[in-house]
Length: 93
Image 1 (tube, helix red, strand yellow):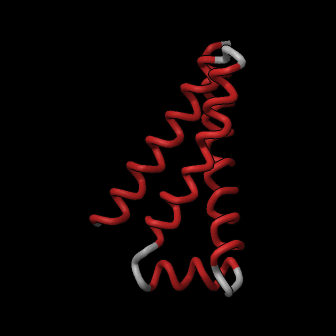
Image 2 (cartoon, one colour; image 1 turned 90 degrees about the horizontal axis):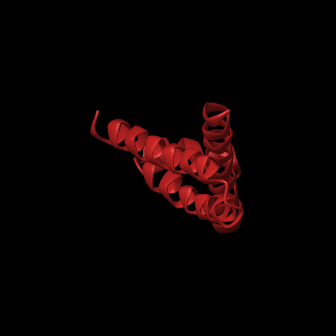
């Protein structure tokens, strides 16, 4: 049961990160999502967009903490750390 709660929190964190990227691009970019992401890869700022999208993870993290669902919150935190590590690996290699 604990592993399932952490996994659910992890999926929630990944979904919140994707939603944050989409929200950021839709609000602050004049181009479409795919064109903006393609340009971000070509000009080496995709990691910054993903990092800004991760800000949206605060919402489910604190909601889970408020509802005393600590293992779900751990999953969101694990997703955030995983995305940060993936961005760092992508950036340096």
